[in-house]
Every structure is written in structure tokens, then in C-alpha cells.
Length: 191
Image (cartoon, rainbow, N blue to C red):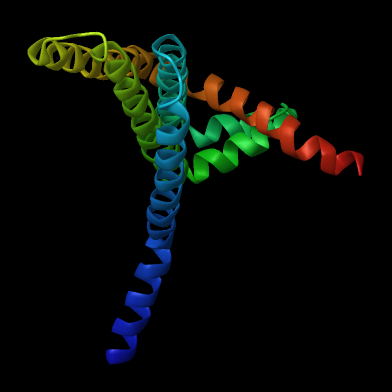
């Protein structure tokens, strides 16, 4: 009886070990990017910081779309596409079979890091603007508006993308499979 519990606990740990790996990866990447963002973004002007904020929001939206699409995609579609010899279908099937992990990485890890970076960019913008303001209450209003705008835009674009990601899940993941296949597997075949 005790042996069964030990085996069950061991299997349960193995089953969710990827979640702990994501935790460690997220902690390391968040720390690294947080340090980098504070050192790099603090030296940039408001315009350049706004450009970087837009890039971070775009990356967060794209990865959120991938996370939603991979969780919504139908494995059987990719099996049929593999039988037809469609490029990228094998990678797409692997992504879909690991949808829990892929979704967590894309939507949580990358999304959270982009949130940290866009927040740091927002702080850079507000500091740049607040330097020219004489009123502390006006600086507080600008800070609130900038952070609200960043959060609002991120949520708006993610919300708009979710419906498309669900409707076009197979197309999105197949396209991603082709990109990954070209980037990582073409070089192996040539060697």
C-alpha cells in the first residue's frame, strides 16, 4: 500500500515537473529582463520608450494568441495534414500535444515578462514627462494615465486577438509549425 502511494506521488510529480521548470524559467527571465529594462530603459527618452512599449505589447499579444490557439487546436487536424505531407504539421502536432506547456510558456512566461518590460517603459516615460512638471499632483495624474493606457492597450489587443485565435487555431499553429520547422529543422536536414 505504501509502495503504491510512493509510486503515485512520483508519477504526479513527474506529470507536473514542467510547471516547476516554468516557475524557475519565469523567475530567472523576469529577474534578468527586469534588471536589463531598468538599466537600458532609464537611459532612453520618452519617444524611444514608447516605441519599446508598443513592441512589448505586440510580443505579449502574439504570444497570447499562440497560447490560446495551441490550447484550442484539434490534434486530428494535424494528423490528417501529416498524412498529406503538409509542411509544419509534425511540429504543429507536437505543439498541440504539449498544449498545456506551450500555452503556459507563451501566455504566462512571455506575457509576464512583456508586462514587466512595458511597465518599466511606462516608468521611463512618466519620469521623463514628470521632470518637466512642477506640480506633484499633475505628475501623479500623468503616471496614472500612462500605466492605465499601457494596461488598457494590452488588454484590448489581447481581447481582440482571442476570438481570432480560437477561430483560426489550426491555421495559426500550422503556420507556427512551418516557421519553427524552417528555423530549426532545415539546418539539420542540410547537414
